[in-house]
Length: 143
Length: 83
Figure (cartoon, rainbow over the protein chains, first blue to last red):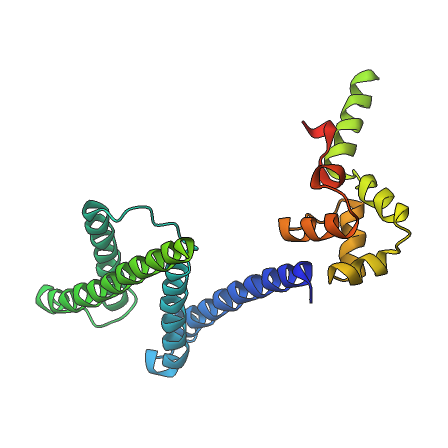
């Protein structure tokens, strides 16, 4: 296998990976909204997709596929707030628009705290990985 | 007419320009595509595509090809028309 074969293989693998992810997303949406299945019925797909996405972003950060020049506190806070807003909207839509739970403001607030904590842990993990990845690259340059 | 000719010439250099220099250097050394490919540790198709101008090799492969053919990178890969 020479460099051209590897390039073609990697390109096809990347395309197929994204097609698979999109297909799984489609399956999850179809099951949830068309077939009206409960989350527990396609929880395996949801967990697989979540873990997959988390690992993908982590690997992209660690191996330098996402360029991180300098981590600014302002950018981190803005990114975190954006995630929190999106997470809150998703939680609200999930329970009160698409679901029939009709949670009260208090119940939604409790869920929002969980969303904030999970997103906080995720952000901290990604920041750590991007720092480690940057350090790794710098070490390679230094060798 | 002149305008169309210019566009066609431009397209020729952009899309279908063959790496004649590589082909000539290979023939000068009396090597077949397969022999050059074996010496460079790549497949014959890769050499064929480079000669056809349909694959851009990495710098490492360019250096390997140049050293096998006893040429410099400029001799093989520098295109005066693209300056």
